[in-house]
Image 1: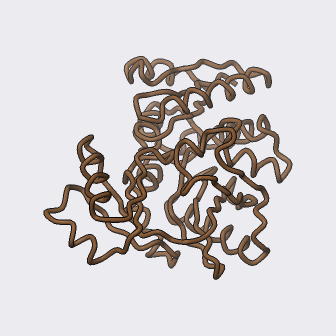
Image 2 (image 1 turned 60 degrees about the vertical axis):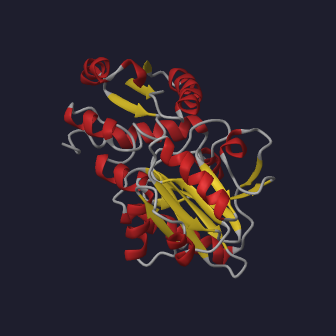
Length: 306
């Protein structure tokens, strides 16, 4: 196939996007595909003629643009099929508070939190609703960039000022004690979950992409019942957002065995340190076979997103 591989862009996650694209390009070429690499930083006006000629696009973008649905909407208008979810599902998943609201509406356990579109007049209103420690995170970012663990009012104030200072929307959530588990969905079925054992206080950007930053154990040794619950929730969250092809849901599993969903990623990382490829390997799919499967799922949707 003639594949247009889209990566890079201008989000804070562009470097990991470009890193993953190198591996994807290598695998696609080895499997006989013709690959045209495109860095989104070159602009939409350069993307359009390439997308009009491509047989299929493979999107390896993280954050915005990419996971926000903008590129998906453009490709759909150009009748260029692509792997993953459409613009609507992508946007809903990236907006963590909107996704959280949908999860709650579908009966999924979520961590107690607040959405802040702007700096509050006083921090007491936050403290009245949430207890320390809290996580302060970007409402529409990923890869654990701009993630702060705060334990008192001064730390909360510093985190809010930093993030609002660079124009971010914020989601604040209480700390949920437990194990970090992630679970992918591929072609309508949940994959074996991964247990993440981080050496740091929490699984931040450095831990996520460092070779020795965290232990990622697949399948997760959490027992059959917890595995079943997490797989069911991952699939339910995927469907609640109206997603397609694949996704990855992140959870906290409490010591009581209760899973809480944190967020869903519609363009899971595709590097040697990424989680979904590890899960796919457990069901017998090599990295190359996983990429090939995603391409075939994309091709099925020709004319399907117009």
